[in-house]
Amino acid sequence: MLDGIESLKSQLITFKMSEIAFEELINSSSNEYSFTALLIHGLLGARDSLIDFARSLASSLSTSSDWRMVLVDLRNHGSSVDIEGLSPPHDVPNAARDVANLFKSLNGAWPDVVIGHSMGGKVALQYALSCAQGDYGDSAKLPKQLWVLDANPGKIENTNTGFEELGKALHTLQTLPSPIPSKEWLVDHMVNLGFSKPLSEYISSRLKKSGEHETFLFNIEGAKEMFKSIRDTDYWPLLEQPPKGTEIAIVRTESQLTWDPDVVERLESLVKRESDGSSGKVSVHVVPRAGHWIHEDEPQKLLEIMVPRMDSLVQPHL
Image (cartoon, rainbow, N blue to C red; front, side, top):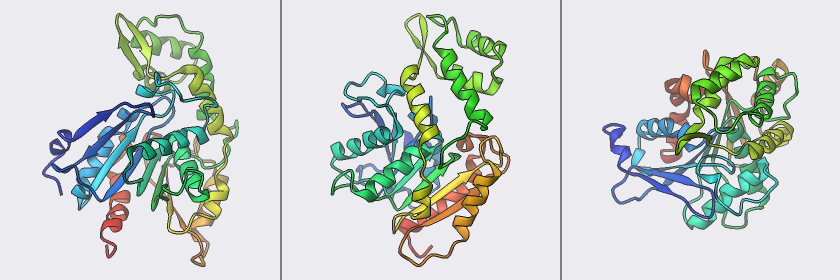
């Protein structure tokens, strides 16, 4: 176990390549590791959205020096916004392929564990599906664990009011004046238009200073296309027949804004189903009182769920 999170900070390495931007976090003076965890952010986010949780996760694992944490900026987000060559369509399958292309370029270990929040959860599911189908070539390695944090695995109906509000907000962002006066102005403007304060504050948090102006840390048009893909993609068939050797763990909140009772019931039926050993497994975990950003709202409870399972990859007897 690490002496503290501070010991991780000195091992934070930042890269930007022709592929998507990423950061690598290794707790080893020799930069050696045995296992890799990939963390994928949600829509409008970036790798900084998960860095605090990645540090906490690394420091909580019983054999933390064995782990490398890789955090990516998906296309149209963060430092990947300005990278050329990330061609349309801007959808979940291409976002997952970007991740695969990154690992191909690194010529190193493919991720043993993939952790995706919200949109990142769907990218993670697509990544596992494509690995299982051989779409990324012979070098690609199927992850042993897939952690999907508060992401509906199927198509999202318009009755999902929280998701619908986000879609309307993306359209509204295209009508804003340029430059945006300030983060405070944006929050007030969005609230006055009828958007919730939490969503308005989150969107304003995705602004950065560019000279004298505020600019978004994401490409609005590209984010709109990815939003549509999140809504339309369906990974229930993958959950019905997970690849052998892979566990897909769905971690959800109790919110009915995200989780329709029918979806919850369908997930629970998959968990209860007896396996004949020909496929992987599905597990479902609920984090009470957490909002959509589980890793920020209840990080300790999330760690209590994830750490024992990740430790078991290093020490199978656990």
